Length: 447
Image 1: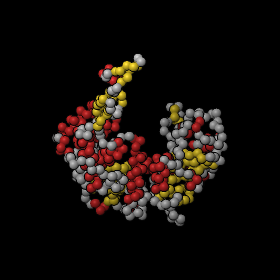
Image 2: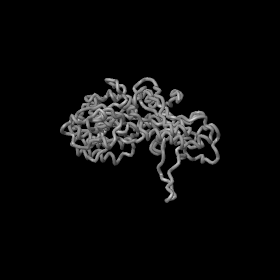
Image 3: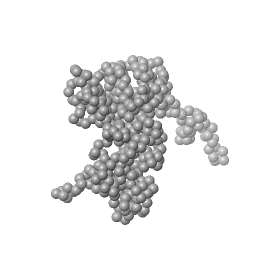
Image 4: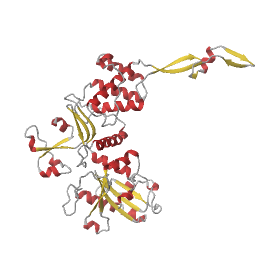
């Protein structure tokens, strides 16, 4: 089990020590790559994953690291899973396979969840057939009516007493409709037994008593799906058929010893950044001409340029060219006469009066935050901004925004640059804004 989790990069082994136990982030040199089958008491196992893992018939729920006091944070994880689902929708893919070179790295959990979600959005797979009726309730086929029915003439005007109409009917005994219902029923059973239906806020369905063997041998079912794929041009039907094909071709159960399925992320720090950028109205990619500035845009600035394009790139004199990479802030917001630079940090910083800071953002994070302000200083001055604010945003399980003072470097403060405010944001409040598509009032941060 440990070997499988390490292979997929969701578990790291570090030597057991008080220092390691208190670390918020792992450095590459801290990670132990040796075989940890023996002498297991010498190691701590650190999960670098947030979400749900099913491995060797065991369901593991991995919570975000800021949840320090909740004993059974089921509601919190349910909300996090909704956030991850929304965050991943922009990819528009079904994660059928885990990120691994192994050919059997089929992500059964992701497929089961997709099949149920698709069913609740689009219903069961169906094939329709067009039939032609006399005097039916469907669309009138005028060509057929004129050419094939008896016409009465009165005052040189034709009258039709019978109409040919078209009706579209669903074949309730269609092979693929029944197959889809069978697989949905199986998926519901598996997720119910793993106690995951409730966690993902889904309702199981019981649509049929048929079992997969009723549809023929595995090779025959796959052959029928291939033939159906060649005749279907509807995008949803194609995606559904391919998912069913993969499910049958990699037939297995969440309880198989070689099964490893994931729903979540190894990079929750990127999710936190993306969410904060969304709710704080990030304007880095907005064109200068569309920004609400305190004064009109100066003529020396290109209206089509974006805010992020204003950051200077390093010049290497021998080449006479600038490098392509440069400083990239997490998010910048312009509110009235204020220019606000945020940095979303997924840290469990311990900042208490009279105690040395622990698990806080490093010196590179502090210096970069000052440099972002320096990078925009000319633009800020040119457009008469009243002030600049710099702020770290970190998650907390508390219910209120917590003020945690500032981070500062005297040598940079002396240049007239703003110190960096520190705010702990209630994660559930941030997620509620993100899931409902609302922006957060920056005034709530009291910068």
